Image 1 (cartoon, helix red, strand yellow):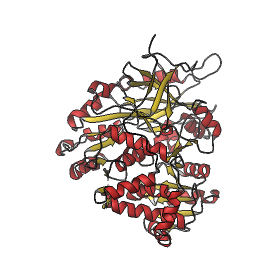
Image 2 (tube, one colour):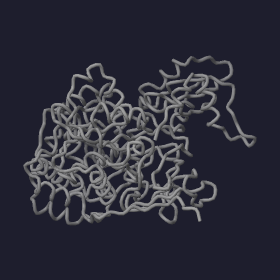
Image 3 (cartoon, helix red, strand yellow):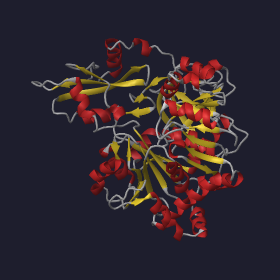
Image 4 (cartoon, helix red, strand yellow):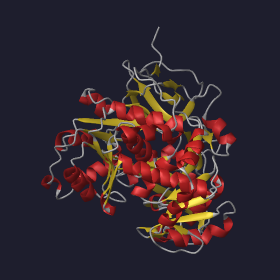
Length: 553
């Protein structure tokens, strides 16, 4: 009988039955004098003892501010030390941290804060061209649940507190009061909401527990063989699981150091950080590694301290992976696969896997997780080597989408299998290869973009009668956004006019790179739009065949 495409992960290490706060406090005592966090762009360094002091201050401030267990606190900021303090401080108070994408515009911020019911928002003053305080001002009157705003920096914004003022509130809360609050927390409690485009048009709040992300971070670190001697360069964003779980939680659970090269990705900052901080591990999506390898000053830097790292977030070109191993000395680099809804990693390559397996697959099942690959039309598990939808089950599956039981039921079946929407194959050794997606979600440089969000926005353009958005292959980002537009009769509009209409109104990574004007769209006889045909046509017309042919895992 043919072997089915099902695997379950095992480990000689048990699952962790603690809260994030409990585990963090143990780590901070055991590795008190070791460096825990270095924020190079802020000039800040914390030992684990010092970081514990700051996380306790934040947890006490939440209690003093009247933020009760289970309330939501949003954080809207690029990478910085305060983000890490918030990540490890809020769980101690039983507060659910809501990650908000730094690229969001006012309408997207409004949606996330309203849908999650945030009572407080921690935000940076600005980031790049985004004035966060101004955008919050545009929508604050529409947020009835929001009663407090904490600004990172010294800006005395109306109706807000600075970070230092907020932390000072905690001086009225005793260690005993904090311990009592921590004692009320259970490892199965919700502790984090991350907005993901998912399977319908508007972002949904994947709700994750202590148990979900603490264990996932721990087993990621185990796979990478982290020890307290490791120093991890983290240029990936904290608002995303890549930074928050694969990096910060993997480090904390092993007493390793978190090294922030900058507030956002910059290839030169990464190369400098690796050399000067003697980093042993480096993270990134393929685009980041390409930018580092191709930087004109790349050969100036001594990267021999590197041993391992993670390339994930979007399909990894095999040639890039080979260059990372040979030119960046990352002989133990791994690839991860997962999704926000699964905390996020469900498969990962091992540091001692043959290079061919590490560059052509997304690895094997993670400990205590299950994977099966099913025929999307029947739900039956397929045989090894056959293509089907990848489904994941286990401790790592989210609690559900925040206040959205219908979407939760659509994504997680009665047997608690999370349906990823990704098409995959599994070989006889259990290595998984992602071959496509059932959903037409676009993954641009590690960002999940759902076409309907952009379509809904473009429908508001007075000259657009109809629009369909697809992903097309791109050498740098993996995929780029292409909008097929049908113009209203009697109107004329240019490609640049449509792009300008988007700029500043939707996140920059959602602005179409290509605009194609069409009289209609390829359809089935029943009127269903065939986006795969649109992708084929656009790939040919735009001359993207070479990008489409790049082999990925």
